[in-house]
Length: 163
Image: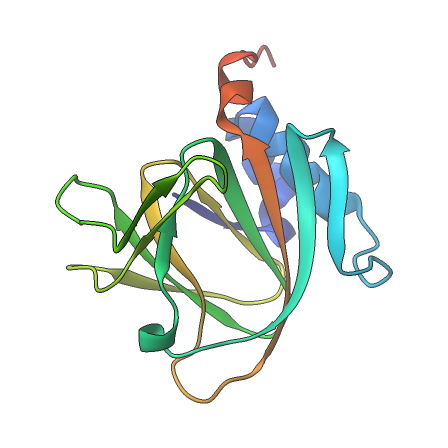
């Protein structure tokens, strides 16, 4: 898991893998106020952005999830989002086993789940060993506008940073 802010991207960028850099560069360069809800290709099916308008939920209402084929980059445009996070240590049993077609396994209660608050301009990179519970609130449901970038994990092995 990586947490950052686009306010510091010009500094943070130098340490990122080129695939993650391309994804966050997309976020920085986009006129996000003019993007419509839905899927926006960045690199064909290998990397795409999904803009969503959601209502946040209580932890008990939202299952945690884990992906194997894609990594996620969650980016908050408007509102505040809490994302529960736990590294997959092999001890958490999914309530819905991994479904390769949807690239997702779902989890219920997680021991030692850590809560991370994202505000507008913040992003969270989640790798295949990161179980995460998005779209949470600590109080009442509120509006959330966010982008989730999905990047195929196999892209990570194709690029070696040279700068």
